[in-house]
Image (cartoon, rainbow, N blue to C red; front, side, top):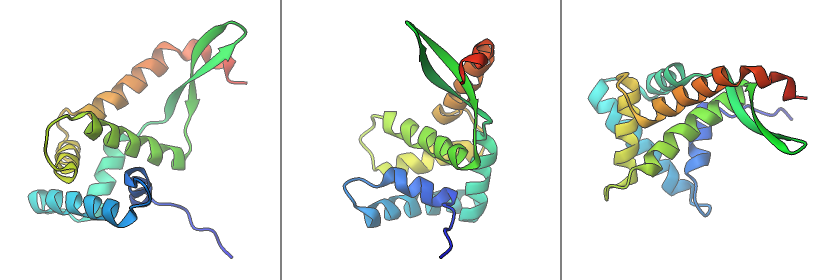
Length: 144
């Protein structure tokens, strides 16, 4: 039996599932991608690729407690972790939007902003992660 790797779409889907409602989460994700696809004339795979390329990161910041102090330490990322962080940044950014509209519409607006390379909350989260990793690069020795 061969294990298959989770792709980026499935990672996105996993973050949207609430109380085991996989069909509802799939409908939200498909609706968001179809709305973006209509506006940009791109396929779903092209949209996913643009999201990954625009929000790609190589490090993440973790909080490490050493003795009585806490340090923020940069860690390198695996591909699976990169996909998770990218999807998490997008879903968290959409969750912070407090407008009373459909979640799929908010998700499509965020994805459209990423694809068009306009400033949005998920890009700001990626930039914040990068800035913190640069600021805390002297804490690398706390990794082990």
